[in-house]
Length: 141
Image: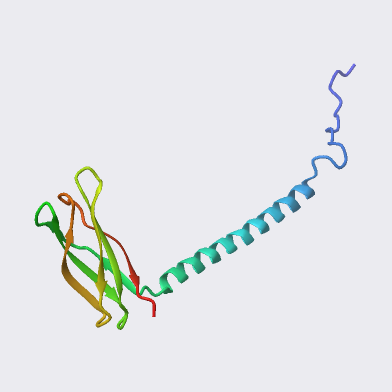
């Protein structure tokens, strides 16, 4: 008698279950949705970056140097780049050693020229250890 095992056909999954066709179409839809989302995201980043770079700043200031003169005065250099004919106000503040605000003032920027550099004096209530430009605002016309 022959005791060799009889070949059996492999068991197939039930019909309609574990279908590879459904997986392929779902993967394809997911890839398409991901590509559309990626293109929209790149477009949004490009639009936001372009609008930021193209926006014209009328007054752009800085305080490159400062020096305490006394316990009640701080001298600072106010440098402003601007459009010719634009005037405005730049706000500067100073803080003491404990971090409290010891002085804050607005400085006028004249309309003449495309830049403004001037050493100004900020009055303080105690010795100032910082000079920080809070911002510049153009005058409304």
